[in-house]
Amino acid sequence: MTRAGGGQTGALAHARRAAAAEWGVLFTAVRETVVAKRLAAVPLACTATALVMLFSIVQHLPGGERFVTHIGVVKAALPLDTSLLRTPLSLYVPALDLPVWGALAQVFFVFGIAEIVLGRRMTLVVAYTCTLAGTLFARIGVALGPGHLLGLHHLDAYVRDTGPSAAVVALAVCVAFRCRAWWTGGTVALVMVVEAVLLPNLAGLEHLVALVTAMLIAVSAEVFGDFWPRVLGGVGAAASVATEATRRPAAGALTP
Image 1 (spheres, rainbow, N blue to C red):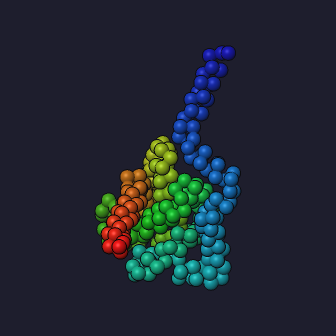
Image 2 (cartoon, rainbow, N blue to C red):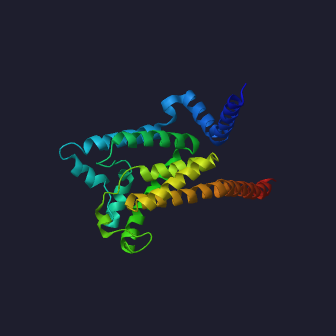
Image 3 (cartoon, one colour):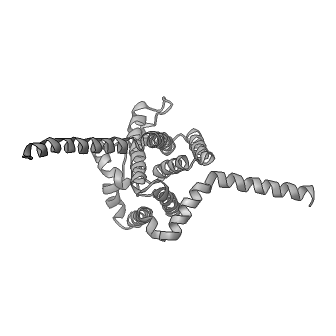
């Protein structure tokens, strides 16, 4: 074997080891679950993808954009209570000027992987918490003004603040953290920072907010994930002991 051939083989083997170290846990978990259950393993991802498709179709029908706007479009200029009511559906309303296929692919694959790795409940918590964080930040950014590092132009208050991108970023970070895919998580973070620097608009800054919020959730889940179950388990055990201790004297008093 020539030196060039040996070098290529060594580089390929190194790349395989690096890929296995980075994505081995993730690939194994997803593959085993999908092989066993197929689409039944990701009902949340399927539902979210269907909702994105549905809203995309409806908002391009005559009168559909007005209907979608009234139930799922969030803007910083709207009253806070209206924005909060619309936020759950705003996650599934794609942008009017972007191809919907990109949003569908992102939602299906990222939500599906997150549903398997993080669990359905945690996936929903991350997606909605980070989307809500971005919605609230838009108001703060507009209030700060363009002169501030994290400020936004007042016209951004009237920009449609919808779509699954913030949730997708947040879920990707949480999955990378859970699977210890540090390079993947770092790459996602770096891309979001570069985006915010090169394109300092509402979407870019909201992606940064989603990124930071997701990191806080991931760390909190890692540190305190089994804290409350242990506390509740201890409380339940203590209650059982106390109940048993109360019954014994009562039983003794009834014994002749």
